[in-house]
Each structure stands twice: as structure tokens, then as C-alpha cells.
Length: 138
Length: 180
View 1 (cartoon, rainbow over the protein chains, first blue to last red):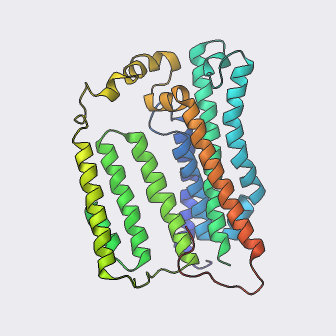
View 2 (cartoon, each protein chain N blue to C red):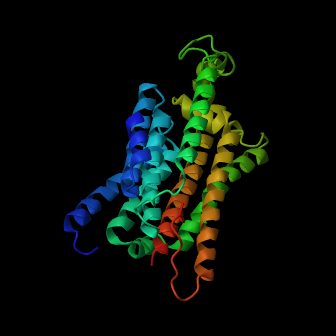
């Protein structure tokens, strides 16, 4: 994969924008279409594009296996942990209204946090599956 | 969409089949946009047309990109067609009972949807009702979905790592239909 000059240049140009768009979809999901699932997939596709153009081994150095595996569990823990925090603050499980003094602000905060959890898990699972597939051929 | 499905069935070259699958997903996403389900269309475009096409190509790279000739008898194919037609007819028959699309008196619009639309903005402060329902009112469901994805990821990791350690030194290749 050393000779596809056009592909490499264009991929390098595109990847930051793909990641930026992923973050936009993640944090703008409250206002427009989008949310954790879509953002996670878009964010993972940036890494997958990088792996397709520059090779899986190089991409694995950028996103090492231990980091991807940790993030799979981390996202689920962020989601479940939000529920536990709302229990500790005297509400029901996953009742975000108690997360802040103002119920509406608490709801907003809770939605934002669990969407981050969803995004982290989805992105890292997609990357893990892709690296698993692509790394097997050799 | 029917055309792409027909081509998928007829094609022998699996690479083209995967590409047609991506096109089908993109058309489905366009259809969902027409139905005003932008969030679902977004997911369909990203997951259906994007990630699953890439994963299917990865599976093809591990196996083969040419479909094998089927050795089944024509009677077998005819039986499959009959079963498919009966299922299709049953589904069409079932859909006749459904309320018309956009009918405001349909049961689905009478239950909790009104409350989400009327109170969602005030209770959660989130303008996108889909996000409010997904993350707040249906928080447990979404937690379950995340757990499904989590489990899928763990399962794939386990399957691949087990295959790696059990593989004998001489690199044997699997038969035709491994992969996905």
C-alpha cells in the first residue's frame, strides 16, 4: 500500500473531517438528527479508512488493541454508571432529573453523558470487529 | 430496490453482491428520509451502507469472491420460491389490517406519543424528540442495546482470539463459507 499516492493524500485530508463530523453528530444529537450510535460508527469509519489506506498494522499502532478493548467496556460502564449515580442521588435508576439541581438541566446532562457512553462503545466495537476481520488474513 | 435484490439473487460475483447490498441500504436510507425518519435513515446509511459493506468485504478477502455452483435440484429452488411467495402473501394480508400511514387515530399515535411530543421539550430540554425518547424515556432499552453491542464485540474478540491460538503452524484455509 505504498504506491497509492492519491488515495493516501485524499485519505489524510478526509480523516480529520470525518472525525470532526463524528463529534458533531455525537454532541449535536440533542438538536438535530444523530446521537451516539451514528457518531460511533462515523468515528470508527475514520479509523477503518485509515487502516484500509495505510494498512492494518499502522492503524493498530494508532489504536492499540488494549485501548480498543478498554473502550468497549468503558462506554458500557459510563452508561450504567450514570444510572448508579442517579440512584445515589436519590432517584430511580437512569432517572437523570436528579443529576443536577434543575431537573431539565439534569435530563440534558444525563442524555449527553449516556450518548457519550453509547458512542464510545459503538466506535470501539466496530473497530475491534474490523481489526479482527482484517488482521486474520495474514 | 427490487432491482438490486433481483441482481443480488442472480449475480455470481460476491464482490458485486456486496456492493449491491450497500446500494440497497443507501436506497433504504433515502426511503426513510422520505418517511421523515431522519435519525433512522442516518443509522441505515452509516451502518448498513458503510460498516456492514466493509465487514462483508473483509469476509470476502478471507474467503472467496466467487459463488460456488449450486448442486441442488430445480425442485428445491421451486420449493423455496413457493415458501417465499406464501410468506409474502401472508405479510401483505397482515398489513391490510394496519392503519393507514399518517392516520392520526392509529393506536400508536394514541398511547404515549402525544405526551412525548407535548411534554418532551419541557421535561428534558432536548429539542430532538427522538433523542429524548431514546435516551431518557426509553433509557433502559438503549442500555440494553448498548449491552447487545458490547456482547457482540466481546463475542467477536473471543471467536477471533480462539481461532488464532488453535490454528496449527501450517496455515490451513477454511472451506468456502466461513466468515460472517
